[in-house]
Structures are given as structure tokens and as C-alpha cells.
Image (cartoon, rainbow, N blue to C red; front, side):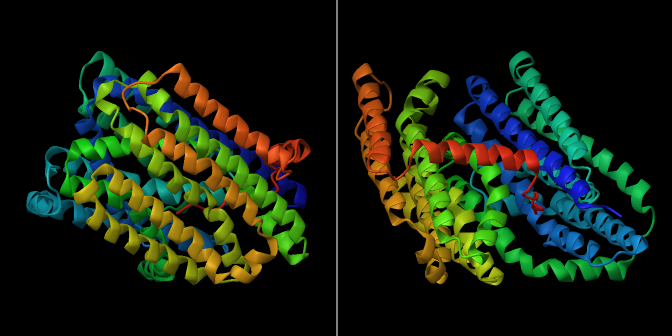
Length: 496
């Protein structure tokens, strides 16, 4: 019988491995981004964004909450034969469901894409997106199998190696072979194809032919209530890109894509926070330790504000240093995307209050409401403002998502919230956005960099002067994060 020590070791190794693996993938992608930008145009990045949109949309269609449902039903029984049957049935579901859709796209793809898109055509990139979605599905249930069997370190290594190989293939195809966007897409197929093969072999060894249609339908029905939240979260990410392509063109999609990638850099620090926050929050709320929650929330908000503020202030210098003049239009857009990213990073806070109140269904409804706001604003603003309109719509939508959760759990939130921390966010963001809005996008100067640095230093000094935060608290928070990753006190959540 497995003891506490077993679970602690597994959680520690798994949490740390997955955090390092995901963070490293993001870092590699950011390092390669300016290299790819030398050889790819904004239109090429627009093609890549639409290619990813097609694959992501079909991935959502093929997975109606089935992965999470399979994991939940897996732990509903101790019968190993039943467990094998669940995974075998769901794995075959992921193999079979994409087939009729792929065939349908082959015959009707041109007509459908002409109606849905403005510049993005079905052949070849649309159909390649359909193929990518097909090969990407089986690895999802394989990944969950690895997690439930506590093989998380092997999972991290197995997914990281094909990712690095795919990045290397893209680099060779783009830089040395001059294949352009075709080279990038070629590299993007490496990891899914490799993991498809690994998934087929692994699941055959584990589950064999234990496939039952009734079990398959049971899992699908059980997962259907999750569809709203899954779709809403993804639509928030891709609505702006799609409507930009529809109203403007692929070049504008490429600019938006670059701005979003750079604006998302501060999200790196939320990787570990998402893992540790819920258990810390639930435990202290249950024990009435509101002061502890308040201080932890304030510290996280202020640290995240600082990183987002740095991104807003110095994004221009990064773009001018790493990219050519074709991408300078992304500079003002970043200033609007970062506040949206800020609210996205704070979602674990508001969702924790909803979870503590056991209002899980409300999370989906709030997410769908935020998605509806995003769609309406994009339709209204993109034809008038272009790329900045999509960025502003994203900002408002994520704000609705965050504050929607707070409104419905305001009584609990008011007990622990430090509203001064949120006020300090505004004191940094407002002048930072103003500086970026009223300085030229094509050049910078020592005076401008000095002014930005002074603003940043003054804001940080104000935090410590007013004792919104102390040096000892910052040290404790950093050390606590490191200790929790090492000790594995926060389980890795199953990702859909």
C-alpha cells in the first residue's frame, strides 16, 4: 500500500519537472521568435496563427471534456480492468472521431474556408491544420495516463525532447533551407507525430483491445458539462486573431500574434503560483487565516504588476533590438495586451473564491459571458481601430472574466482583499501606457529610457515606503514558492 512518503516524492518530482519543462518550452519559443522574424513576414506569422487556430478549434471539437472525464472515472474505481477499459475506449474515441471530419474537410474544405476566412485558404495550410489536429489528439489521453500512473517526470522528458527536435527542424528549414513559413509548419509536425507513435504503442501495451462502446459514450456524456469553460477560454485567445483576418488581413494577424507573445512573458511566474495557490487558499480560508491570504494575494499582485509594468515600458526597446521595422506596429499594441494578460494572470485568484464557494458551474458561465463580450467588442472595434481594437477587446474581456468571479463571491473576497494593491497597479500601468502612447514607435533615446526607469524605481520605492510590501515578505514569498516546488505540496492539476 502506497504511503504518504510515496505521494510526496511523486508530487515533488512531477510538479518540478512539469514546471521546468513548460517554462523551458516557453523560453525556447521566445528565443527563437526574433530569429524566425528575420526570415518570416507579418503575413507568415498570420498564416501560422490561422494554422494554429484551425488545429486548436478541431482539437476542442474532438475533445468534449473527455480527457478530464476519463481521469475522474478512472479514480472512481479500484478495478484495474475497468480502468484499462476506460483508457482504451477513450483512446480509440480520439483515434476514430477525427476521421470523418478529416474526410469531410478533404471534400468540402475549400468551400468552407472561402466562407469562413478572408485570406487564409484551405490548401495547403488549412488542410495541414486539419492533419495536425488529427495527430494531436491521442497524445492527450496518453499524457493523462502518464500522470495517473505517476510517471510525470517521464512525461515531461518525453514531451520536451520532440519539442526541441521540432524547434531545431524549424530552425534548419527556415534559416538554412529557406523554406519560410513551410519550414516552420514542418517543424510543428515533429512533436505531434512522435508523440502520436509513443501514445499508440504505450496505450496498446497498457489497455490492449479493451474497447467498449458503452464505456466510450459514458465518458463522453460525463465530460460534456465541461465544454462551456473549455471553449470559452480558448475562444478568448483566438477570437481577435480570427476577426482580424476576417476584417483586416493576415499581416495584421501576424502583428497581433507577435504582440501577444511578447506581452505574455510575465505569465511565466504564474506557472508555479497556479500549482500552489488553491491548496494554500483553501487551507487558510477553512482555518480563518484571512490575514495570510491577504498578504499573499497582495504580494503576488504587486510582483505581477511589476513584471507587467516592465513589459509595457520596455517592450519597444525589445522590439527595436530584436525585430526589424516590419514589426514596429506591434509596439503600441503590446501596451494594451499586457493589462489583459495581467487579468489573465489573476484568474487563479478569482477562480479560487468560486471554487471555495463550490460554484464551479458559475465559472463556465462567467467565461462564456467574457467570450461574448470579446466577440462583440472585436466586431465593433476591429473595423475602426484595427489591431489595437482586438487588443482592447481582449483587455476588457479578461477584466470581465476576473471581476465576474469577484462580484459573485464578493463577501469572501472583501474579507481578505487588499484593494490598495490593485490601486498600486493602476498607478504604474496608467503612466506606463501613456509613455508608450506618446513616444515614437520607430526609435528610442537615453532620455526616454531614463524616464521609464525613474517611473519604475519610484513605483517600487513607493511600495516599500508605504509598507505595502516589505523586503522580508518578498524573500519569504520567493522562498515559499521554491520550497513548495521542492516538497511537492501542491499537486499538478490535470489540464484539459
